[in-house]
Image (cartoon, rainbow, N blue to C red; front, side):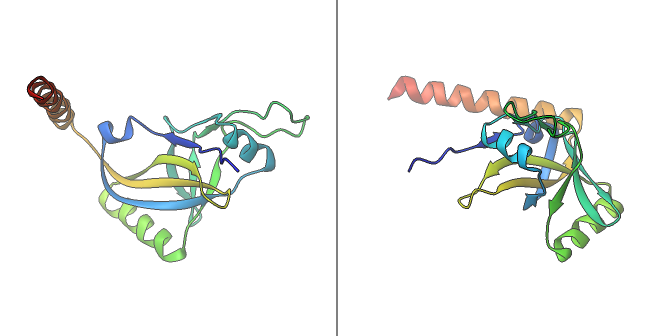
Length: 152
């Protein structure tokens, strides 16, 4: 049986943020939402996470409406609850409130049991000069790879 591998990444996250810590969280979804995610029709590029009443929610995650659903379809941009341990939630809430860090979704995937999971990162925003350094490092790596390729 061939499994459909869903791996939706937030490509801008590594460029715009410095990732300090990573967590894997479950997502509380409706039936049509999981079907759309399994079809690969989701995006996390503009999303972020916030705490409401001690619980963590992902906001602005776009899950397209399921095409074969009736009028009981889901809202594409609704808030979705993330499922983490209490200790992880307390740790994250403490760090976000004290040091001004933010929580950004990095990757949305389906695990081996068929459940949707979200890898979130505790991040610190990069300054403009940090972004320039990242671009410079990337260009230098490309140049080195080209030079190595010429000599091989």
